[in-house]
Length: 156
Image (cartoon, rainbow, N blue to C red; front, side, top):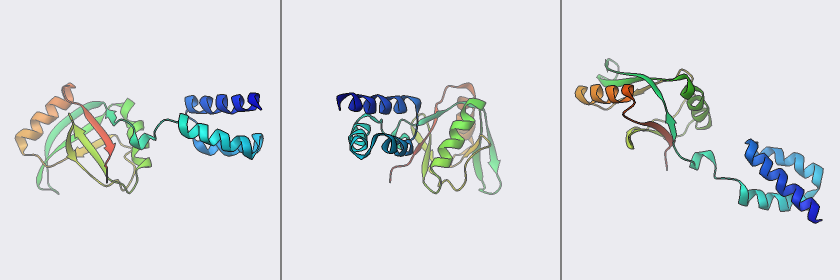
């Protein structure tokens, strides 16, 4: 029995390290039986790190940012184009958080708190609620890499 418990613990750690999702545990249950599955589930709950929603914010790398006047909003906005390395993580993040509110922050300051209605695959983000001077300053800081852009699920 001790060897079986070690197998479960090793398998769960390997799953965690490989980033495999919890639904794979159904296969383990079929292979090891319900008693070992129950023990494994308890170990899994203790070993598995917190969900990505509760993880650190997703830091996005900016390729280019520019301030412009948006005719629809009748206000200055910052048009941000992300580097290729940030496009896929943002698309995955917004896919996981559909119909939920998220916060886009620059240097820790919440810039916007939109509700995600569709995944952002393009790698382009618009931030609003600025006067023209703030928008130009923020765009130049983001373009130069002096400011940090991050996104995180908004707390309720």
